[in-house]
Length: 426
Image 1: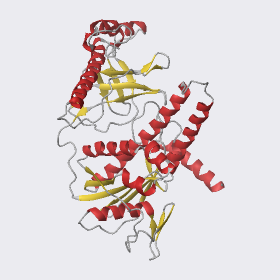
Image 2: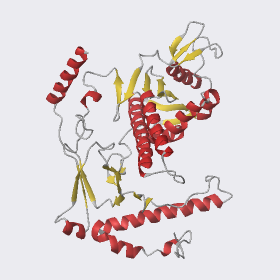
Image 3: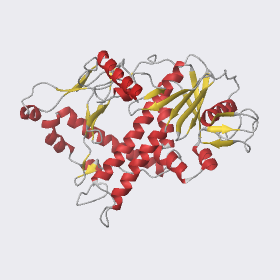
Image 4: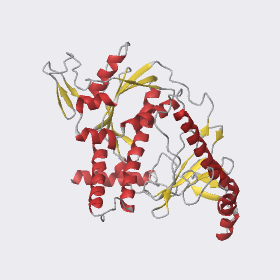
């Protein structure tokens, strides 16, 4: 408000009385947390001013769009986004069968609830980096979509925590929406991550949003329920993207892949542009965001991501090289020369061969994956299908830590037998 000279808030941004704010909230949050919130806010403003200076510096070409100043996390009418930050020395994490997080809180809060010591919270899930040298500032926020708290913990790891791939292999990805990722490697492996069910749920949510918007009063464009649906739709997509990147790169790292080629979005739109394609690549799959997420995750594994042209790879016959005689129908690519194969897997293989000099080993049988809301599962599902097991997401994982409750192997066996008997009856 000072930056925009609104409502009588004059003066510089840095004139805000942060000391009074710290004194107001430290009794509840704790002094260290109140300080961290103020510090993070200051970091956001310093980053904004630094980016703004670069934008106005004609000799600097790194910033091409005018930056926006930090904004509010919600508003009083629609509710604030509940979020806090905890200093690295003000919390501890213990991983095990009953993982837990302990954080410092203010004396006022302790007195109000007759509590001593730190606030203890149980954790569901496993860390990506279980062995680290130093923990950073913890981000803790409330996810209204799933009615649960989530946390993000940055850590410092040693240089040899994860070595670079031992081999010098390459992979190429064909990114779409019906099949989110088709991957071919020089080791002869092929992976296919299916996305039709995800896109269908995306469209169903979009239709709900459209129906609710049509019922709004004149002059209104949104509501709390509509915003909640938007957040739910985005969270679903982001969760699937993150899990896909992690699952795929774990596999590529194990195979010794050190370079991954992905195609540019312009090639896809120039060749196959349509309203539905545009909705899938931009709105549903958010191609640019996925590519950035893939690159960030690949950096953890020492894998290089390179963007190359994939023009016509989805229409090129790998046997005769024709692009104008091939026919693509859904997932199938056929050619008068006799070729008949999976369109996206063929495209990723053609894409790979086009940009490498090394030989590609004979292709193994493709491994297909389906999203079950929590992880990518190989198809066909085993007799202990995650979909059959899942009743409560926080308690059913047998291979990770849980927040409360344990699903025993005997219980899973019972569930499996029930499922098998129903299948046989059907």
